[in-house]
Amino acid sequence: MRTPVAAAIAVLALGVGAAGCGSASAPSPPSGVDGLVVPTPDPDPADFVAVVDNPWFPLTVGSRWEYADRAGGQVALTRSVEAGPEIDGVATTTLVRAWADGTVVRDLYAQDRAGNVWWFGREGQWLAGEAGAEAGLMMPARPRFGDGFRTAAAPGLSEVATVEAVGEEVAVPLATYERTVDLEIVDATGTRTEVYARGVGLVRTDEAGLVAYDEARS
Image 1 (cartoon, rainbow, N blue to C red):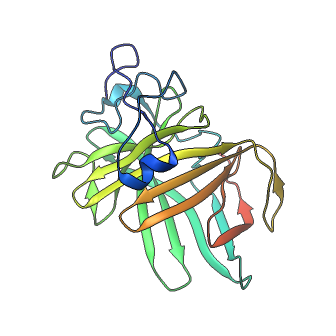
Image 2: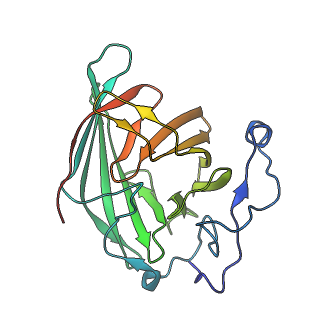
């Protein structure tokens, strides 16, 4: 990843029409992702820190979240955090997602010095730096309404996220949150919405809402 001073802005301002046709409008004005190339072809370990403590996407090892199906109220998804492997010298953190049907997915994330969180791979599927895969941006340090960015670039995988709302009140079974960020994520399977609350992380998806959060202390 090029340093913030030297890198060009490569974040897309994606409108509804752009998302639908696969094109993008002009680059976003300055925001929390300034100076980054997204996705990044050459992450520099010196640009990254050892922990992921972005307030919108905190990943403290030992933390755990539970989400209940919004229709039936049954626990449909759990998320937990483990230490991750090093990828090309960058320390990553593993987010483990486990669904009620037994499906388990392990995603690898790392945070740069500015507080932006990058997606470095999915165990068993792709890793940044291998077979043309590149780390994408998962959560900016300072998300702003209208910003768009690639979350990943790998063979057979291309995701684009757009900040659809900031600061909307969101009620889930565990609590009501006012400091939130809504991401609309588009990939080959369709479009989904994820809502993140400051200091907590993901609180709602299209299918499930947060019912329990056990925050580990680093």
